[in-house]
Length: 180
Image 1: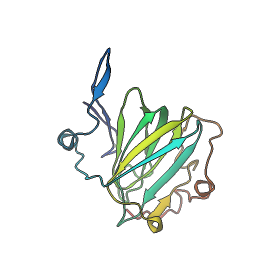
Image 2: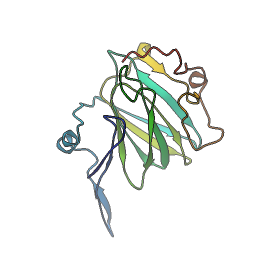
Image 3: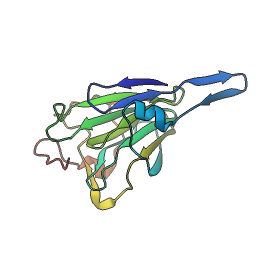
């Protein structure tokens, strides 16, 4: 398993070793022991999956405390550009973001700790995005930031993404009162 730490504290990419032969392939997608060695000790309680057309952008979302969630995200089919924005008050990287290209063929995953807004854009038709969450979803605790906020300056790598009405009206970072 290969571990890559990002410049924003707590964000980690994990790429498993894939054992392939003429029968197919085998890989270990999760190991609490190896993840703990990489600084990930969260317990995951809920798995989610979305299927998206090419160009669908979902985010930037988070759950407010006490329902805040760490996420372990991956792509089972297709490719997606994943984005994590630091919204932790007092963090030296507050308002900064990192991106990770998630690829089904590579089977890499991206760990996003509590205190981040998260989003992704599907780069292929029928992209299947999967994520583990450290807390249960709670509708009243939904929060988010506007995907194209100029203050965030995120390069999504796509001209005209397909966005939900809900995601089009999220607040910008300016004046945002982070719950973290």
